Image (cartoon, rainbow, N blue to C red):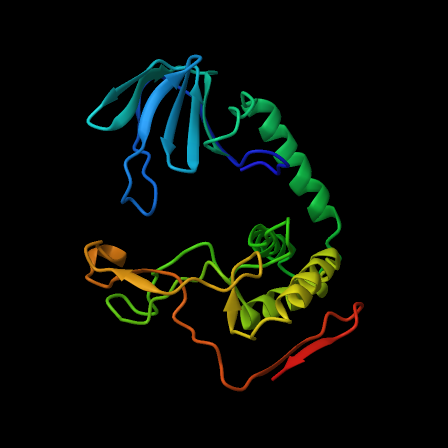
Amino acid sequence: MPPRDGAPQLIRIVEGVSGRVPMRSALRMRFSYGRVVPWVHKHDGRTVAVAGPDSVWFDTDCETYGKSLTTYSDFTVAPGDRIAFTISWEPSHKNPPPLPEPEQSLEATEDFWREWVEHCTYHGPYREAVVRSLITLKALTYAPTGGIVAAPTTSLPEDIGGVRNWDYRYTWLRDAAITLSSLLRTGYREEARAWREWLLRASPATPRTCRSCTASRASASWARPSWTGCRATRTPRRSGSATAPPTSSSWTCTARSPRPCTSRT
């Protein structure tokens, strides 16, 4: 996913290394956690799936066809071939997003991360592993607001088959503070400033252990018992946060260079 200021995009490039390999791409677009099957049709040669306020645009040079509510592409990859597949999200009432440029996006993504890594001030043991971890932490930040999610996943239980499995796609104050500590100690202060601004926007509201990355209240938690859990267990899949507004709370975040900010009720 390249850094962006426009439509969110997900890009995959299939590269042929040796031999000739017949392949098939199968894309099943669903919305609202799989509950909504979109209207899939062609628009000026592009495949678009529309469901209420959302639309997803699928672009590739391969021929596509629909079967059993799935969009397929059959192709063969030879040495030196590079075949791109791109999906872009856009509100359904807006004009189509621009045609993606996969190779340019790949180059821009690599340049972005190389430049970001150059600001790392850590030069101790296992630097390569530290940098790899920092990249993961940076990828958890939401650039428009500065919010930092605990993890990009939901419903991974603490033990396989256990009931303690939650939706961590929120900004949990504790987890974000630990992430900031790691970023600050390795020279990344802009992320701390951005999160402090997120915290100030969240502070006037009732303090909660977690909020969305936009600082709004987390949605109510609900489970999907019909979905298979982690590793085919019956552990329910969850969406939303089960945390309730505390009756009394106190939390402090100190971002070193920015002044500490505290909210207390």
